Length: 162
Image 1 (cartoon, rainbow, N blue to C red):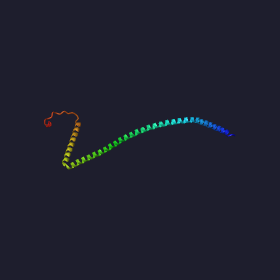
Image 2: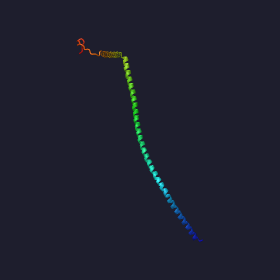
Image 3: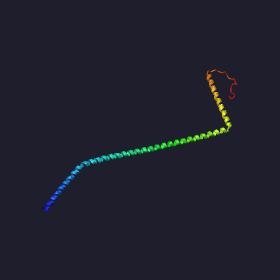
Image 4: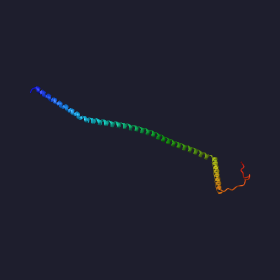
């Protein structure tokens, strides 16, 4: 056989192989087209879900920051309340110390000043006598609860400083 024939046969085999390859590629591309559309739809669906998750994460982050600020504000208020409580305790301790100092001062003055002690005793006795007098008057009024008219008093019975 002649070399030209072999060249034509080789060219024909090459052309047939090329046609088969092109048909195969076309069939492959047309067969891949549908799965690629599905993958694109899945990718879009996944993108929408990721966008929703990002939005939810942003919202949660915003709420977390608000809660953090609220907690910080409440912590400051509690700390202020605790500080006020400590200040109150310190004030009570200072007041107690002042009362003790005044009491000890009064006690030492009473111990050193016997005349003041005598006056206090006299005032106490007077106050007790006055209370006993009031009790006696109240008890005698309850016993004599009926009205009895009295005669006009003599000038000797009237008090002198009227």
